[in-house]
Amino acid sequence: MVQTPQTSETDTLLLAYPKTLKLHVTQEQFAALAASNRELQLERTATGELIVNPPTGWETGERNFSIIGQLYCWYENYQQGKAFDCNTGFILPNGANRSPDACWVSQDRWDALSQEQKKTFPEICPDFVVELRSDSDTLKSLPEKMQEYLENGAKLGWLIDPQRRIVEVYRADSDVEMLSNPTELSGENLLPGFVLDLGRVWGKS
Image 1: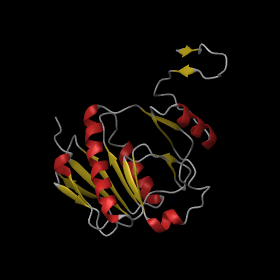
Image 2: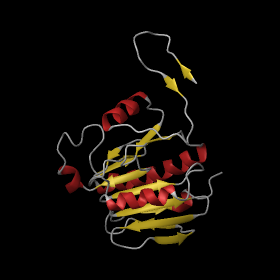
Image 3: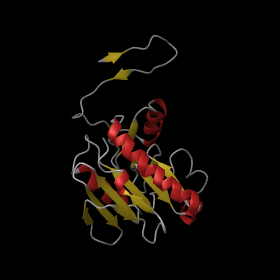
Image 4: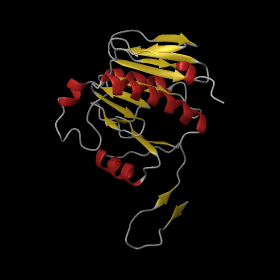
């Protein structure tokens, strides 16, 4: 269904399209779409395919709030690098536009960016990324996304699956480690002192 706006001062159209239809956009078009649809979390693959992520349900929102909150508390004490929430988009070296559910960029890599590279969507892949599986995420798409982060510069990544209480730990130059019902996760040497309490993430009701 296409609805024509009431005002003649805009060329905006509201378009509903099936998920099976793949739309491809340029970086410039993606930036314009993201600016006009702030209620949606938009992503773009390296080949330019647009991905529309609808707002999450309350359970996923609460879990992600806990993850971001714990990362923020560590960041406030550590005061190194840059920490971001799920609303921040990044342009990866392969050209994809991605928005991890939580992430962190080391200070030296952030400082190495030019002001132009920091504009709107930073042109960098975070050192540390977290993806939280929601009901709409497939078991295939998220591991592929995690591998993409590693291939583009991430050093540590957590794929947290509350439905199965499984965490997949991704490290650069290492096999994926699968943890069954862990109680906490360590930021290891990359984020010294950061421990994510999963007791505040599992079993929300």
